[in-house]
Image (cartoon, rainbow, N blue to C red):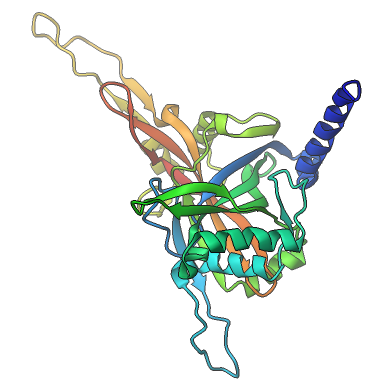
Length: 338
């Protein structure tokens, strides 16, 4: 048995890699796509993100939320909890067998319907009856980000999503229990994507905060991409429309460069009280870039259980440091709008 173990382990690793790459093999083969990276993080995806979490993973802005539960043009009390709309719909979809579910994030261990129901039952028995879907406070998301060098544009593709279970402790504080299971996001063609966008009852935007990736957070599968180099190139020669980070108003090239590249004379006086002749100092704000904020638009069609996501904009996040050199906070420099 020990003799066959290395071969089996090697086969498992190969199958694991093939499964991971299968959902974006076209990106790996596309010569125009110069960079591909996987990223796994947690998102808040309900219309109102929960205030019981210690971390604000992302901002949520509602674009559209429609009540589709109507009969003959009348809308009865459907028992919808709009604050937890996405969690409630995912919970009911799991109970109805609408999703392709797996026990692992690599999507190698399928969960039959009876095992999905068992996991829901364990969730039910651990929580008060009215709090079942409210326990799904966040969602762990596996996706790939990629960069098309021909049009200098980022893109994103969802791979899988996992409702993450939280439960209150004896003092009432909610604590993280981990993913309930993993839901595979299907690979949609153009027609299917268009139908989901049209029919989606729930459409929302996320702007990354704590879940914005640093370079070391990404699992790079193809090519190389420097966050600071990309931000500097966009500031010098914008590829798409750039927006101010605070007003979201368009910035022309001159205004953008004035925002990013500043020149100043250091105020120094020598021992004789004379200001010496000094060379201007040119500051480049992109040197402080530590993360990328991806702005995404999400579409969920409860009728078909279709989930689709597009990338709407990207912003370089720069570190603002105190006198001791420690990061106080991070702020977007500008938005590149696609």
